[in-house]
Length: 284
Image 1 (cartoon, helix red, strand yellow):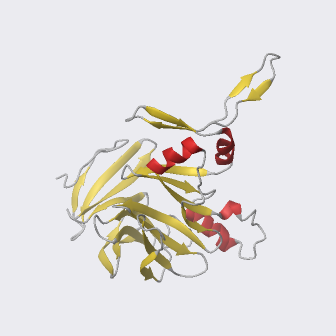
Image 2 (cartoon, one colour):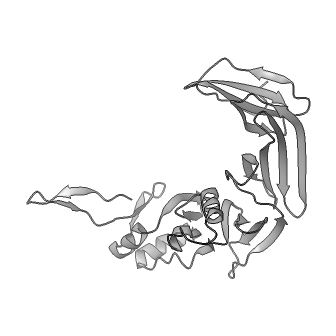
Image 3 (cartoon, one colour):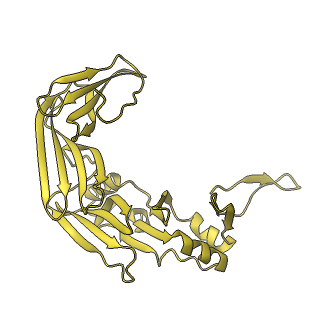
């Protein structure tokens, strides 16, 4: 949604009212939100909107990224630089798309009713997934070395959270308070398991590649210690095919990509300097 500028008859700059339109391309229909609701949505900082399983419209609402929010709160424990509660609020709204269409026509859209998770100063929500009518999310605490992996069945009326597991460390994507860089995060198909691949940086050149499986059982797989060049970092890992991918910056728009064996650190493939690369599983 954008506010469009225009000039009136007296050549004075004005604005249109905020307007939200939901378009159903398959059904060849569109749904116009009322001016009242559009004005309300205008003040919500919606950073991501996804349609999951062709059934659920997912709204991610926040002012800060999860790692940025965490680091700001840790840096300001006394609260001297806290702007407002709203500034640090994270919300996940999951609205059934068919219900949303009905509510738009009746002008009864209720985002609070479909707000499933909300955090402020206590925690952040770095990762989330929806699969088979289940909503999964990771909750990382600000003042504790603790992260929790949850599941909510969206078909149940009470929508209660089920704790799958707790790990005694902070899982964050890009925080200055962690010694690792997350390479890949995904939900394992048809299982209540969150997969996290990360590069644990010991110093500027030495890294350990680790795969973490968060489920009823927490499993950690550590691979060989890799020695990378100073400008080289791991960008992908494929455990099923046994390789990882690194990229080394030479100069702007000039990069070398390398494929290494996860198991014996052998260099399997190295590209010529290029700006980008497209590869598929088992590229060799």
